[in-house]
Amino acid sequence: MPTAHAEPAAKHGSLPFAEALPWTRNDALVAVGAAALDLIGFTLSSQDTQGFVPVAGCLLMTVSGLALLARRRAPVLTFAAVLALGLSVHLSWPVGQGLNASMIVALYSVVRVRGAAVYVPAVLASAVLPLAAREPWSQGSLLKLAGNGAAVLFVVAAGLVMNRWQREVDAHRGLLAERAVADERRRIAREMHDIVAHHVTTMQLMAGGARANLDRNPEIARDALVTLEGLGRTALHEMRELLDVLRADGDTREASTAPQPGIADLDRIVAESCEAGMPTEFDVRGAPRQLPGGMQLTVFRVVQEALTNARKHGGSGAHACVRLTYADHETVVDVRDDGEGAAGSSGSMSGSGYGLIGMRERVALHGGSLWTGPSQGRGYRVTARLPLPKEEGALR
Image 1 (cartoon, one colour):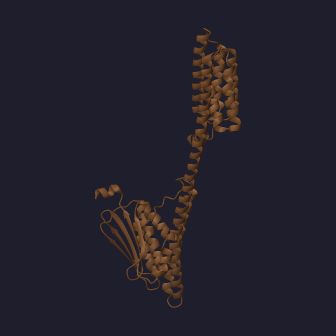
Image 2: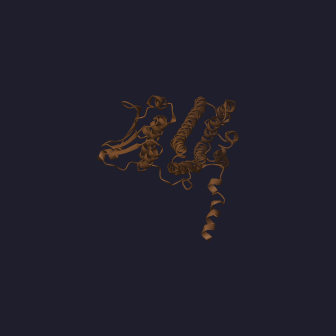
Image 3: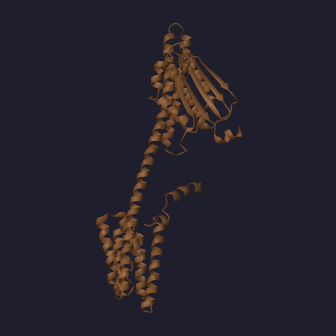
């Protein structure tokens, strides 16, 4: 029991010290690195020109570098602080006429997050800063000043290039997010269509049969109503599973752990088709093999959708045949009916309906192909070819 109470306390306690800081580890590394470079440059310059290293100058250089810790939260104020500290150093000691590392990083931060109205004055201030140097001017000083201007332009160009690259990355990320949302919507629509269309169509046909036999053969009507109740329960169960997955939002603890329908459930939907008034045969050819779960679900949904359309458009007296063939390098699913609705159903099966679109997307997901069209003579035919996974096909 004490352990059970200790875990929530740790979970809701204060954040670690590193997470509570207003800067990241990378910010700290940049600040320390810039301060170190500036200290080295100031030390070497002071030793060369004065013969000693001013302690106050080292302190100002250190503070200038550490000010970069706030560059993400307040880039303009950080630049102003670094500029003021750099100006103080230039006015106090002869440190040369070049930009230090802290100034370069501060200027880059302003260019990254602010517009031209802000970074242009910052660029001009950075360019004229060496004019305050106490070092005597010479021809070499002009070269240093030109190099300083080139360095400033390079920093600005680097910031602008990074801004453009960041915009392209954000736009690409947005497109990927929109595509992911669209794919998820199609997946949900496909699952909803497969569940609702099959069960509701079967329930409608069985309800009509029960009504027709209610007076002359109550036992048949009773059996149909019992089956109708079971179909409704199954449809609600599958709908609830799908909604649970959507509500879980990635939390596997709340998601349903019930197995997805597969090849083992083909007998059930064939029996449902027979009970709905369409005699249906089920034939398996070849040596059965264990297929991946996603491929089994595809086989199940293809047969389910094909039989649903056959019952819709086949007309009275139609028969259907489901054939599952295990070939050497593929699994073939073939669903045929001999109904009179081929001409009428071709419009709905030509590609405009969600059922055919869903079947094509499922089959294409596994690298397969789907063919739909009128059978020879009469009726309609749906054939899906699903290639075996590479490792399984290689073993055979």
